[in-house]
Image 1 (tube, rainbow, N blue to C red):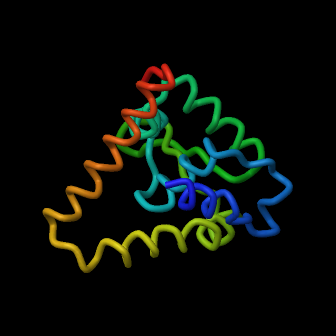
Image 2: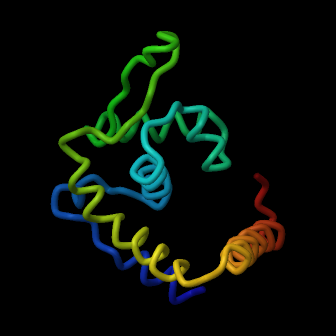
Length: 137
């Protein structure tokens, strides 16, 4: 596990993103948007297991930097949809796609039951670390 985390930390962002001081919290949010598409702040908060205000702060920070954009939800004009801006999409994809492709490549030969075991094990590890460190979700 330390090698996996270390390798992820060494993934340097593309030149376009380097000056933006992106932190792990940004990486997680950008990964969700890149892999799962546009979402609301509430959906992002739920997926990241953070308070909606925390997700909103991260979205605001990345929006000010031009990495994200907000648009009205056509189905409900009171809601805003968050997405990676067109000017940043290529750089974000270049940065984060290798990790997603690596996971797909590693999990592809496994049976669905084996994949479930890997995911459940990683979630168990995450829960144990949170419990032992006193972190609260």
